[in-house]
Image 1 (cartoon, rainbow, N blue to C red):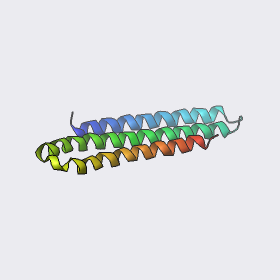
Image 2 (cartoon, helix red, strand yellow):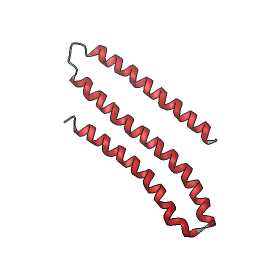
Image 3 (cartoon, one colour):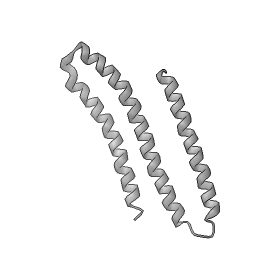
Image 4 (cartoon, rainbow, N blue to C red):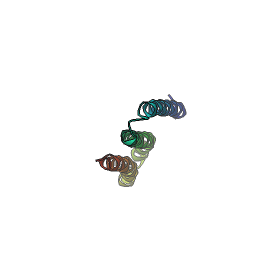
Length: 111
């Protein structure tokens, strides 16, 4: 499967998940009309935390997959550049960890 095909597939899956979340949110809003919106706010915050992790993980995974393949070929030709290429992977992983920290902050603010 080519990268563009997998990217299209992941985009469709992400959009389908967002549509499902929006439909669920609409039904929750209809069910809690008289019960207050505090629970709805907590649910939407948790949904936002989940979306943050999902999008960041998807982006980091795609980036690492593409970069790792290129790095493996580059290091096979010139082993002395291994340290420099390792930094690319570290920076991509750091973005995913930042999203994890942000989602934990969102969840902890609900307390």
